[in-house]
Length: 297
Image 1: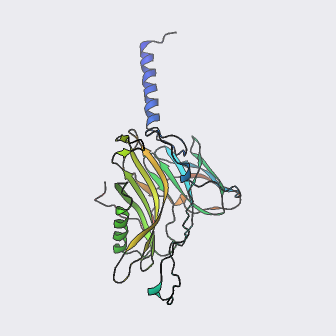
Image 2: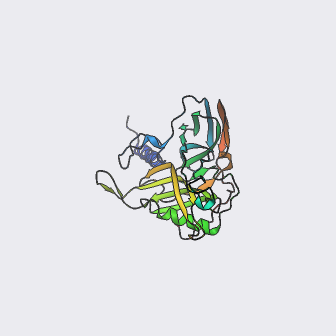
Image 3: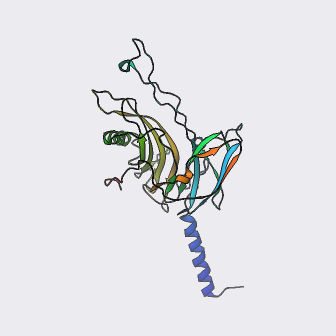
């Protein structure tokens, strides 16, 4: 049976709207799958594998999300000792101390995510976990960056920003969402960083793509190694990518806003699955939040 013309037009409009909605929905985090833009495979090694000997986990449902949820990630509240004073030949005074890099493994687990925004993690070792929820046009996080009193000075913060700016030139746009840590010799800082490559991207095949961007959200671990002569001098000791995305023509471009959400912090996991129920995404006051940088887009 042939439908009347006005009905055919209406169905065509509905189909077009549905297709547009699907296009602007964003791409879910799915390691191992091929990117629809560059046709390259996303590495499966970015995320930590569940521990087969651990019976703990987290499950819940994300609510009040402003756009489609693309992924839910969990990080244990671990603070590896990225530097220490060690005895050296000639004594153990501060001037003879040296930097010792320690094991700085920071796990990031990726949840299974359903169409109704129900998420679940399994195989999590016992401990406290913070979550990060990536949406199509923003992200929410509950990361505990610092357990000690925040004592970074303005000079420290400027030096940290300068060091991050000169690191990893692949990304030409960088934004620090939060910086926390301790000032002084062998002080430590942890930075929640977002970096975007807005310049053309060259593939291994030498093909140059101008229609995509690369966005990464990462944790930066830094240490002050300055002296009274050198002044404030911060070094990047380790970075840990939490997410990496290819952003195509229909997606939100550039730096996306990030919001601290208290409900995403400090979820305790033991030997069973912790059901946190509905998790409402909301913007809460964050400790030591950086003021907006007028020079950044």
